[in-house]
Length: 125
Image (cartoon, rainbow, N blue to C red; front, side, top):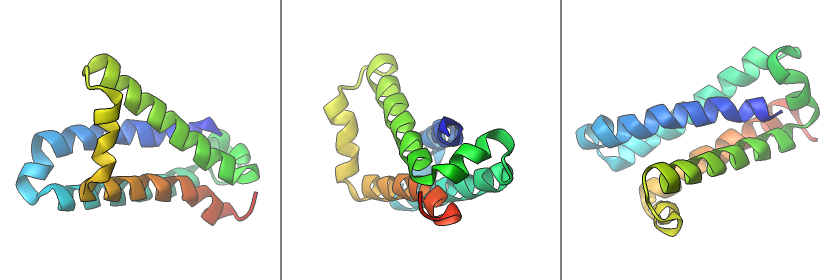
């Protein structure tokens, strides 16, 4: 079930770097956030397709779709906070304040969408 969170965390490392170093400067922060949102949703759908039929943790995702989504969010926020505070030295409250911007809200919607995908894909828990 926690396997569902790993693609999100790995993808966020890529999209976060890409947005910071290149994408936001080229197309703007809102467009960059929308690209990130869509990449989260595509990755979630791809992972659900890959795990369909019980392969690679699919049984747990199918049996507990809401829990899989919530575990993915928890893993994301723990990893994100640890990287920001421990590796980058950014105070946690400043790091989380990004969600008060429009681009941050778009990113948060992408995260919520990723978390909701197993429930939408498999139905009720």
